[in-house]
Image 1: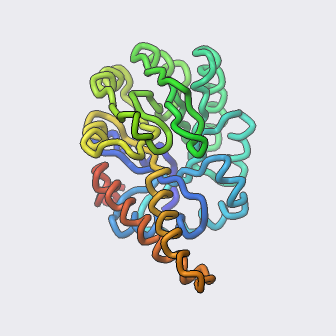
Image 2 (image 1 turned 180 degrees about the horizontal axis):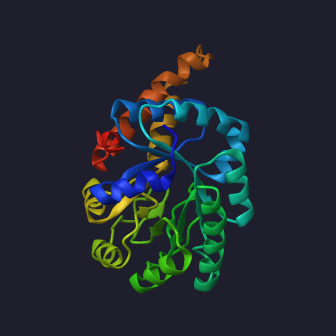
Length: 286
């Protein structure tokens, strides 16, 4: 069932669990993520970054929409980290049902103005909008963009931002980084800050940079008000590490021989995340 991010996250907010937003970068990954979500009877948000859209091609989105429409679980197709208003128009044109506008690196009032403009346009055609306040850290060149240092979300600013923009969900900065953490960087979430933000902001909250964080912190964040957790690096590492292992056999050349074990390795990681976030079986709520 194809639906919007708001339709999925409002239920998660009401019932106190988090929905995984898995970033996919090819058709095999996409199919595997939908399959494991159906096996777990869990709602799904498919995150596709503008760079990933350029990689897979806009034409693939039409096939993604077809598969989502016949899925047994609710699925939103989410434009992840849109940087400009024009990118959001592209997302609307090619069929996304949820968009993120990331003005987190802009001055506060400029972020409000850009996010409000996106909300007015997206809501007019029935799409939901996520914005970001505060900055997520970056770990390496393979990760999505982020700041050298985290700028934590201020609870008062969050309340003002939501009131002035009308966004459906808000990505907050409470201590995560995009990518895989290097050995000298210790992941640590400010859960007290999360509680303060949730007290001020009642809409669904989003955690970016959810890969590679300690399970106990992530699970607690889901209990305290995070309703969407972005997972990209963890599933891609599992997928491509298995691919490197499989390709050690020089005789293999057919994707049908190479990709299935890679998808299986990715699905194992995704299943653990679905369980961890409290999303297993929650498709029954929709």
